[in-house]
Length: 589
Ligand code: AGP
Image 1 (cartoon, protein in one colour):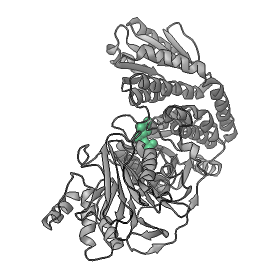
Image 2: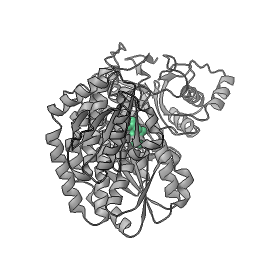
Image 3: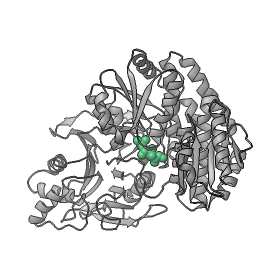
Image 4: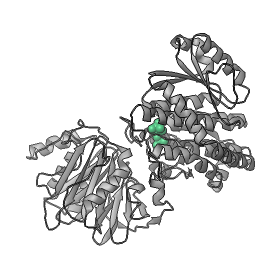
């Protein structure tokens, strides 16, 4: 939650404009408000610009200067107002602070500082950081004041501090993501790489307990507890600027949905040594326990069916519900944590708890350099590239195809899994085309004024329905609810009236006939039946034909939901890349 950006020694001497470019790439992390602080040329007083709402096409009127910091906010403490927008300043306006996280002990700090005469302008927890640094810097150099302040904060946090006196940017990390970019004589900080990818792909992902100081001379890395300087070994990422651009599409969401024809088959080329290591453990009797949140949780639910089909038992938990079951994890558990960002607070809590019990932790992640990756014993980095839309699509399918491959490695049949995933990629390549888009936009037009949609599916199509429904909710704000087909007669059927849109997801499999019987029951109650299936049926009032790929029909069935959510969102005037109230990574409990 919240996006952080900083530039030092900006070559164009337009650091505020550069910061705005960076923030536009980070807006998916929070869009309640945005703000920039800059040290203007030849002046010591910081200039600040803040606005509520999305950054969109915004421009900044801040003057020239080569050092600035900026922030996009997902509000936690204090309402969505200009005053609460970051950056926040100290009393003398010589220190500006931006922050991602929650300072759990901010009330005590605020009251101590108020007693010392500090005046607060916002309701945020962040503002106390600026004043505490100011207070401490009366006695010690700024670097020590920042480190001591950060070490006294309780909670998961990342802060970036702009100091006018030393003309430096100081940043500290504990629990919230932060990455430094080392360009050609200009230096950057971001919550995520796309923020500065236009300028450099040479990066250092800060670990918890690390700090960096950016000056005109370069980037120095420190250990926060000891204050000692550490060796900085930057890495070069293979990400290209196009990965973080819309590339002619109106929205990232649509671009990322279409990219799946490439990102899914790519998973069959990567991670081979790690898949081998993990699968050996499974074959040696380790029990698989999976955990994740939201879309990533639905990924684990689908993976549970894939494992079961091939004869391997597994369990999965929403990470937020895992703690009562932690006691069953032990040294013979392979604990698979699935997370696009690798920063989801509940997912990390569950993984840490399992690790404490001795479990072998596997991170199935898309973003690079994440906390989850660092705490894991083994990582399956699914390689879908930057996923900018808040609604997860390509990361989800890349994670699921990776787990599909793991299920095959686990029974020592990797080649079969690999060839099926390649085949899936080829089929998607042909199927995702104008004809499909036309059909889905037609369907969207008929549903645009509905406020309730229902979905049913059985076996693999049950998690497919859950994910399909979530995409509709996130992208279009239509209430859509998925049920296991078998649940229908146990209460759900009361919801169906004449004309209620009912989606029926099916594959050409053993569950098909049962699902179609459920569809007939819905139709008999007046339900309008929309079939998402490779096979046509008399029960369907509207049919979107998907691909007949056995268990892998899961993928096209879900892609229909992704596209339908997108087009419904467009039709209803939402911003499909930035749904209201959501953030890309949920770093708070
Ligand atoms: C996906 O569309 C959602 N925005 C959300 O459910 C997401 O999957 C969830 O918050 C988990 O995120 P993660 O994969 O980064 O852990």
